[in-house]
Length: 469
Image (cartoon, one colour):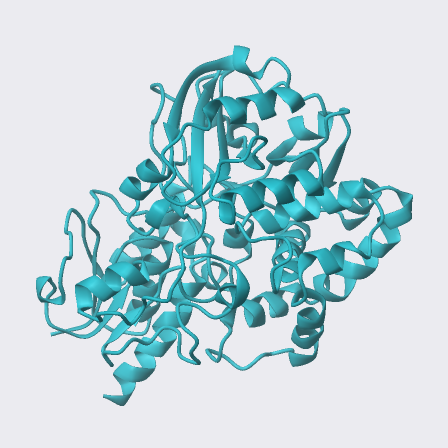
């Protein structure tokens, strides 16, 4: 009998399997698709030689993840590559705010009225970032805080809505950039703890940047899989699990799946019926004949570029997708240009470009024209650079990854208390009604992103049970 079976080979499932195997437990991992990866894959979606990331592309949480940093992933081929700027937020007049590695450079882009305010905001946390990141991403109750004072101070700053934090600033450039940071988890700007979301992304950039993985996000998954195999773990692909009886006998079962799928497979009935899924995404991967012709020079040097003319415009786009049930006329967009940092992603002189906007969950329309109109506002002539595009709305995103219910790449709405307490109100979020069954997907704390911490935290709960039995 195996000690543990893991279902789903996304970053969290892989990390959970690795953590268990590192501690001497026998582990087998089962994945429905032909390759491991989940939200961290790389494929030629458009033309030969153009390597695209169908979901995650830039990895501020990955390079800062306490779980990943504790593993020898570099030995298994993972290499982080950085653009000159982690992120830029251009405006229609050709100017831009930036999120640079340097706090001073970042603060200067907000103008003299807010530069000092920004430095005072981040300074208490940046000097203790590694400890704070470990404490913040290990909650709840998987580890005692190493620095409870700094964690409490972070909570005071981050638990209120992002609009409260933004009110401390006068420059609209800061407010637009920070609103964009919050929108990365598709959370309404006025939601609880949204200030913490923006702060985490900003601090991550200052600490270690927003890199891409050389060769594509698949490199993260492949490194985890390679390490797992060397630890003696087994990986079975093309193996769809429809019920627990499909799996071999084990002392524990760990699911990197949506709560909906887990309830169906394990027969949990209505246990997760109150779990909410959020807006979907409409994603376009581009093969380009040259770099994106941004008007703002800062955007040309950035790995990630946020597209939203103002905080108000971003807020309207989020409300349209999350509350009004319609696609926004001017979508807020997150874009990544991996080949700025990694020329191996495209043939010489060519580029890959990654972009998505928010739409209602399960939406079946076409946002391509609206997204490209937005891009043309900030990069006139963009359409002339397009060689090919691969379009995926919510239905296609869900078909690629079953965890993206209705096209929700966060595997659950990151709003209200569900941003912090997911998938249920519980001190033991990785446990389920069955004592031998656990959940480790991004439907559990600390939530969405390629960081492996949900898998890491769930593995702790599993090995505690295995050692007791």
